[in-house]
Image 1 (tube, helix red, strand yellow):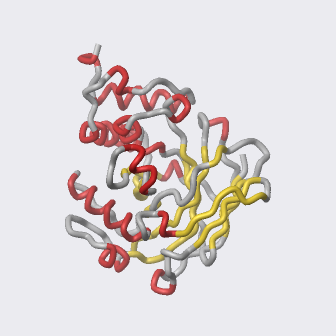
Image 2: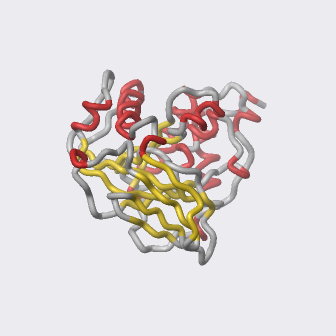
Length: 260
């Protein structure tokens, strides 16, 4: 019955799936009244439980930054989600396949914030002025829904399919980069399977950063100094499989290889 669903129950269901490494059906199939605003409350309740278990917030991530993906989902701006320290994976450490359901990898341009960034009214220019360094990154996404099949409120509640992330230790001065033209090649087993530039992320990753700051302001939050911001997948995501190395190689930001 739809009346049996609450924000707390939805958060518990998603966390239980994550802990048990099992997927399930869309919450909206049983709770059709779940809208995006309520889904963000589920996301925050999920985060509160993780913090109670000792995890610390280290940043934010954006999802559905591709305009093509936004059109498919019927939205005009990206989603936001939280990053915690438990999601961080060191460079050269294999993806823990035993702890995930059906992980996929996508390349990301990552910002490390030098200053606090709080909306509303943040522009791409003011957003970039708050960035301390730019890094190559990989996000390992994982959905708690069967076959990654979800509606918009489902994926918002599921913290935008967050799972793990890898960030290169080498940072670059944002003032010396044209991130619109920063290119990335995505390879599996040494074969290039996709490519993109920073323009794939809202036209420029700074636009995604500004959108995130403004969206968080509506929820009473801001992007704090020292936080990481994963600006969104540049290409389609590829599945992580045992023994198959996945490499993302950027023009200036460097390269990261992950293995299952």
